[in-house]
Length: 364
Image 1 (cartoon, rainbow, N blue to C red):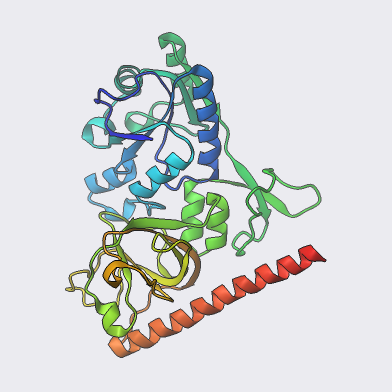
Image 2 (spheres, rainbow, N blue to C red; image 1 turned 135 degrees about the horizontal axis):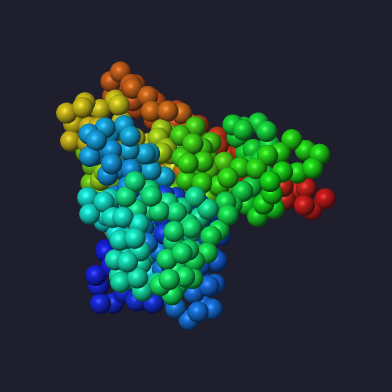
């Protein structure tokens, strides 16, 4: 998959099948849309393309208004978004910088400058709530009319819904991946849930990791390069893998039981802190910055020098243990981490027990 910043590049495929969106957390609804997009691209003999924006438009408008609280919590980083889009088989992604010029484009200007002149679209697929242009003045009808006039096809995909029990916030209330998509089940207390980035954010914010995984189609994960930290963890006896993020407001936060991929042939069990670590001095070098700090319950052997700096790891957040806590001193922090490790081991043991019981039932 090729990635371009803006559309003024000679290597961009100038005839393409395109979809447009923020794709914050490439969830099952996005995946269904991207599968249709790729099929249409193959049928037409053109490249499948995604146009997305960075920063998120709401981030930009929050900054302009000097109201940072208006910026949305984000499901994923740009890196993880691009990885997910590649897994969906997309040929190219155009990341359009969202600033004053893009924000002020009229719908007609966006169609002319970006879709036609910039990308030479042959087919455009959008969601049923798609809006574009300054003040969100453009809609599907306007885009469809422009396609008729300018020679490209336009299609709209309805919302992707899954059925779920009425107990809206019950953990594991959503059906397993692969369950039939439905608006409801006759005779049962089920209702349709529209799969959306907002629903994923809500599940992550509530710590409902099973529900988030079912909306995403896979466990929620974050990837990045391991960077140097204060090395406080190793002083406390709990060395960590640190992932640092610039300008990111994660939808999830707290302490989690996790699996770490990328250091060994198989996943490593661990416990992770995603957040700002309130026990640290605000004047600390990392004070107030979002970090994902992960301690492997069994530190991997075979690493050069025993270190993982510079390696790319993927951390799956499987189960939330609790919110971030403020500890009164390093001794209390050390005891808290030790308890989190014990609780994570209990969680993984319970998973093993569930798997064993399922195998037993299957044999019966």
